[in-house]
Every structure is written in structure tokens, then in C-alpha cells.
Image 1 (cartoon, one colour):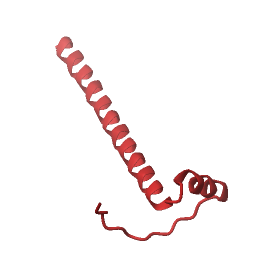
Image 2 (cartoon, one colour; image 1 turned 180 degrees about the horizontal axis):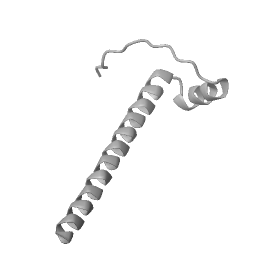
Image 3 (cartoon, rainbow, N blue to C red; image 1 turned 120 degrees about the vertical axis):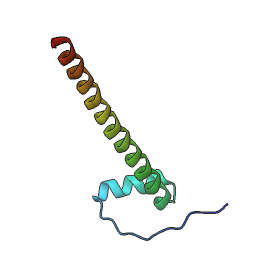
Image 4 (cartoon, rainbow, N blue to C red; image 1 turned 30 degrees about the vertical axis):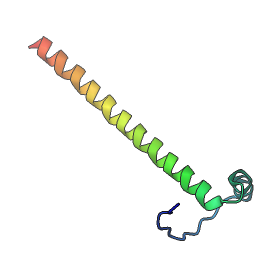
Length: 70
């Protein structure tokens, strides 16, 4: 099994969060945090996509109402 290249970073966490993350990671905190960040970035991207799609829908409604008014 090959792993992707890694970059060492330093983070600062509240003690209780660090403790819970270590416990949940079952000994591999780096992989656990990498997966959590991937999920967070994916969720943020999906939320931004949904926000932009919602703006498109409102624009479509405005265009339709302007066409009806004309």
C-alpha cells in the first residue's frame, strides 16, 4: 500500500478536543485529522455549490417575472 506524500504541520487545539481526537483516532491522529479535514473541505465545497445554485434559482425567478411583466 502506497501513501501519498505528507507535509508536517503544527496545530494548537484545546486540551479536551485533542484528548478526544487522540482517543477516537485509535493511535493514528494524523490520518484521523486528514480525513476530518477532507470531509470538512468537501462539506464546505458542497455548501458553497448549494449557495451558488440557490442564487441561480432566484435569478431564474427574477428573469421569469420580468418576462411576464413585459
